[in-house]
Length: 182
Image 1: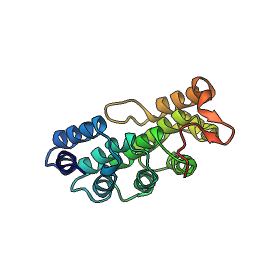
Image 2: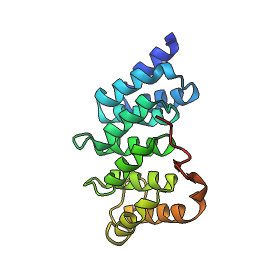
Image 3: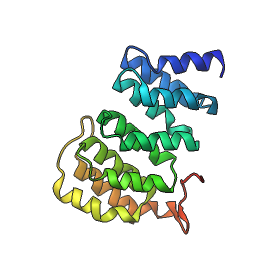
Image 4: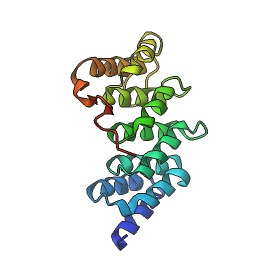
């Protein structure tokens, strides 16, 4: 890891949310696999929830097996802050493995509206057919609004539309086209 990458990784654990997310954006501009370890460390034990959320946000471009497994653990961790779990679910939409689909399906039934919202989003992006029944249930029952966005029901509706329509190209015989091979 270069000195610049070390500084960026350290800024993920900065004192302000702005500093942490600016570091995450810098990682997007220079997403090297050498950042895998500091990103996972920050995701798992960053000082504040916004530090851990910034790490999950930055992980969207690094699709290594270790990154994907760390994101899955964050989604499943019921003691983790909902924002962190939501960022991890969103990141899995962009790089995941077959098992990630199951993790996100389970997240549709979680207590956290943020996690349900982002799991619905991710499953829609993945065109996961198995999610339709649970998504329809959310459409009918979950009117809770996620701050800065819209209701879980609306996101579930959007996900169903993606699954049934435009995202059909994301599926292939042996799984979704975005699944990283283990």
